[in-house]
Image (cartoon, rainbow, N blue to C red; front, side, top):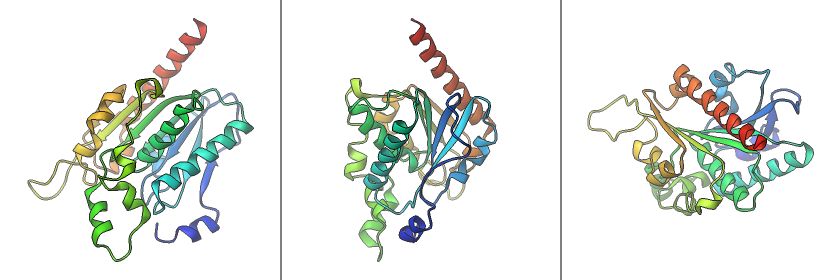
Amino acid sequence: MWKPAEFIDSKYAGLFFLQAYDPDKIPVLFVHGMNGTGGDFTPIIDQIDTKRYQVWLYNYPSSLSLPFLTKALSEIMKEITQRHSIDSLHLVAHSMGGLIAKGYLNQCSAVKECDFIRSFTSISSPFSGVKSAEMGVKYAPVVMPAWRGLSPNSTVISTLFDVSASEISPPHFLIFGYRLKGALNAESSDGVISLSSQLRPSAQLQAERVIGFDDDHVTILSSPNMHNQLFDFWQKQEIAEAGYLQF
């Protein structure tokens, strides 16, 4: 987070396949949050049916600007889709990764370049921004570029759901956590992201499914109940797509 150039030079950044590409398996692309790595999704990955799915991880230095990270993901996905004939993919993002993933979907949906993405699942994402990031921009001696995009009044946040109904793609599963530890009368949250930010009204309106779990910002990734709901969502989207193709 504090040494992005070194992170990139060390070849830690990019999109990584956990196994050789298999055209017969559906890719699942995971996008981590701030100060995270693809390893954050290990509890989910360990439960995935590897006979049906293959795991991809977008790893990036999370201090960089959100528009830059979104564009990087977009360019990487363009290259991958040119190399491989991908007709189905599930996108899963945690925390700030949800903003990057949604920004990417906005871009590719507008030009009809992500019809192959069957579902988008956001987990504990700050769709209305993070107030502490705004405070950091105002008062911190060193400002991370990502904080500017995370600020509630940023262009990134204000335009995130500013798309027409015809451009909304793919089905969105919005997962939020609500377990809060600490002082009484604190703002409702999962310990990191406020409920009001996770449950931004425009995000709920565009989501196909919205479910909350009694977990904090980290433990939600290890929740068996969440895993079951996630895998069920994937299967329903795959069945719906199969039915559409047969029709």
